[in-house]
Length: 346
Ligand SMILES: NC(=O)c1ccc[n+]([C@@H]2O[C@H](COP(=O)([O-])OP(=O)(O)OC[C@H]3O[C@@H](n4cnc5c(N)ncnc54)[C@H](OP(=O)(O)O)[C@@H]3O)[C@@H](O)[C@H]2O)c1
Image 1 (cartoon, rainbow, N blue to C red):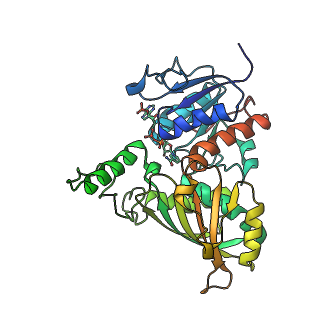
Image 2 (image 1 turned 45 degrees about the vertical axis):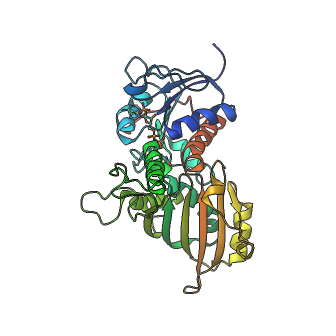
Image 3 (image 1 turned 90 degrees about the vertical axis):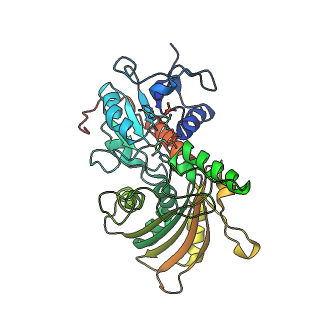
């Protein structure tokens, strides 16, 4: 058998899983074998590149060094601990383990050192949070952050492949003056609309779970529970690429010019900020790109220690698949994959 790790990709047929498989190959992750897992529906299906989809079972999950999950919270809840118990380090894309005390929540450019404390499961943050904290980290380090007011404009790919199909089907029907089918992925029509309802409203909460993720995950990743966060998450009829308007109130004064310099030098960030020439980040340009794009950086006229900015990134790449693979690379570089460990994340 060749050198390298034996890697499981769970959710390999999905949008994020497909991209993770491609990134493992493109970035030449040292894998000696990659095994694709998905639901029973897909078992036996041959994927691009020749991998044949396996089903999750006690006998099929043995012998992995690394397992990267992107198959929803229920699958991660059931199977991530089993992979970890069987000896794999798990990187999980779902929200299932993110706020667990024993589970590091890591963005490769922001808090890579948190990986060292892993006990078998590492969580990949929510896509909206991920791109935002990449842009906030250099500002946080320079001036601290007291408060964030966030409005997101989230693409339908963040909901999954079926939501993309629903947007395209509805758009097609409307353009051809046909009636649209009853929405299945969202509470209302998404085509030609904006829904102030990204994520779900759980048990009487007046915030969606997506908004709660932005609040809680931002604090966990930046390691600062004192940051006040106000978030409104909106689903818009964009296929791929989340946009965010973020008002950042810093603890010490930070000029837009200094913020621009800090962001231009930050890893994973690209500044696109010449609004007079119509240069600013846009979802259509971010689609397929690795960077977090930041523009419209300006002082909030209503608050002297606050800046406004516009942050855009490909939610399937940096918001999900790319960060997961970057975490795998960091684990490898830091010798954290084959470490003996005691797991207590159940
Ligand atoms: N899309 C984003 O922007 C984004 C960002 C961050 C995190 N995430 C998370 O990543 C995950 C997947 O997102 P996605 O957009 O790739 O969704 P998707 O396109 O709908 O794909 C879902 C994947 O999960 C698999 N799956 C579903 N039920 C399963 C089961 N019971 N056992 C094993 N596999 C199962 C599916 O397999 P079949 O093809 O066989 O059904 C498919 O491979 C979700 O947890 C999501 O929250 C997504």
